[in-house]
Image 1 (cartoon, one colour):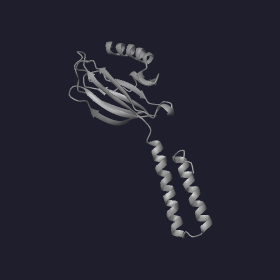
Image 2 (tube, rainbow, N blue to C red; image 1 turned 90 degrees about the horizontal axis):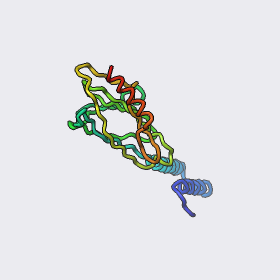
Image 3 (cartoon, helix red, strand yellow; image 1 turned 180 degrees about the vertical axis):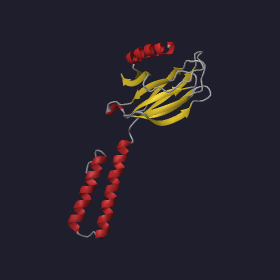
Image 4 (tube, one colour; image 1 turned 30 degrees about the horizontal axis):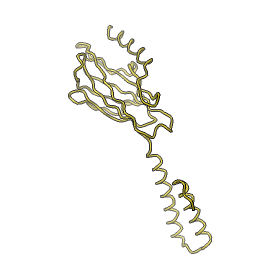
Length: 188
């Protein structure tokens, strides 16, 4: 018997056991039931092993103020309009978290009395390329708006992280347009 992959092993074992049960008639009902449970367990293990090979996008960065010094802030992660996770940066503005492949999230960096920034993250890539892990380090700067209360604005993203050319990058066309709109917003 030549074995090529785990699928072949699963098929060959189930074929073998089914032929043995059918021809020998020596296996009791309890034995058949146990054999069926073992085959189902084998199939579930092989399926789980296949799905574990999906990679991850690791996002790490630092939030800085207008003087390029670290700024402690809060990170909010949304899926659609639903808040999924919230966590603070370190005292010097550092953060890191991961995003599973084939996901889309909205990342919001917020600090009171600063203009919040929203970044769209899409990890939807071709299945053949999603099996490895990717890293995307970046800096994000927040500008003060005085003592005016600031709020989270999901409708005004300033950046978009996408997969292009074998790696995750900022979508430069989206970023140019969004940053021009942000400058107008800050002037107002």
